[in-house]
Picture 1 (cartoon, rainbow, N blue to C red):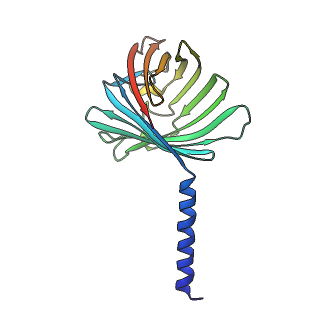
Picture 2 (picture 1 turned 120 degrees about the vertical axis):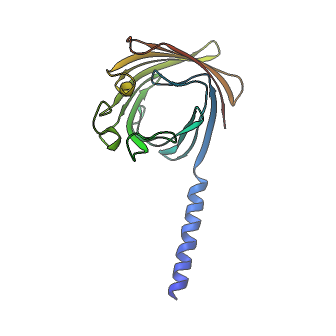
Picture 3 (picture 1 turned 135 degrees about the vertical axis):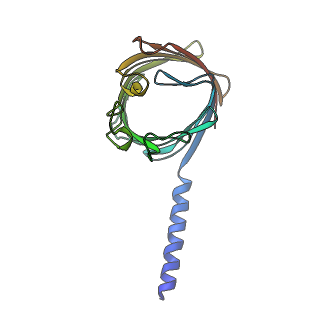
Length: 219
């Protein structure tokens, strides 16, 4: 059998395998209009259009979270691996934050954050950490961390949630570590459409209290 035929068979095998693999990936997404862009207690911008496009294959999920920021765009690709921990849910992953309107440092267009989650029933804990990298060189931006403990329930036809968070994520805007309590109520209007009411209460004086509303559509 000639070398050319061997290569052709190899290429055909790869195409068929990749097609079969692609067919097993479950894709989903959502788009949400929010009255304020609030991220971990910091009012980043006013009204914004946000959403997620993601795929899942077995224990691996991946995608991009996006948001308008004024006339610019934030795109945050992520990858997450669900761990085989039985009745206790857990995962590890990474997110790359990037903005088309700014650099984290000269020539640095992205910053990477690692995260881990664990949950049991309605209780969940998440930890986020920004390891030392070019974007964190020289200053307050080093070793940012953020920890969240959350729980929720369904009552009166809505999903209610409460989260306590603490960390130095906001250090670029606020010099010291800070904490907040976030409250949310989400009401489904249809299988795909929902409306949410959110309130972020700054436990420390450094964070302002922020209220925002979101209307989301999932697909």
